[in-house]
Image (cartoon, rainbow, N blue to C red; front, side, top):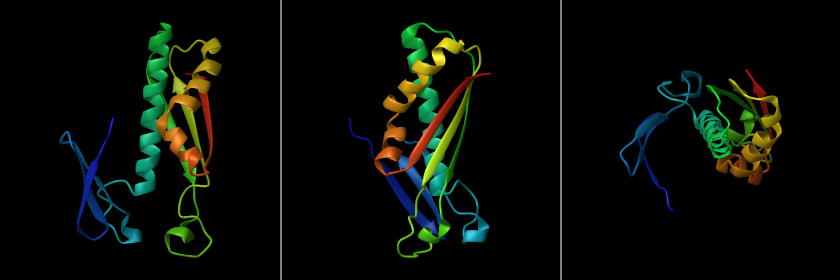
Amino acid sequence: MQLSIRSESLQGMQSIQCTDSGLSWTIDEPVSMGGTNLGPNPLEAVLGAWAGCLSIVIRMVCQENGWPIGPVAVHASGEFDPRGFMGIPGVSPYFSTAEATVEVSQLDASWVEPLTQSAESRCPVSGLLRAAGVHTSIAIQPK
């Protein structure tokens, strides 16, 4: 399967991303970084993709096992040194660490470990982060 995105920057720091299926969204920077704050910055978008991917994997694994669950809420955060983005040599421009806390309603405590293992091994965005050398942690807990 191949996926593709077209990105077009019309002004300032803002760009519009479009999928082949016609979906679109804005990537921007906050005003303090020269943007207009009309969308998440690229690293926020990565965290959003990771949070969404974790939610999907958790729902898939629960469905595969016949485990009924309620709503899933993910809080993802990442730590990075903005000096890398500003072009300082030797400073990484991306996350050094990223962590996700996942709250799952109606989750049986015995499912936490298999869900955590599946989230770490089956989530494509988790794999991308780890392949980039980002130290990731995922904590799944009943809500």
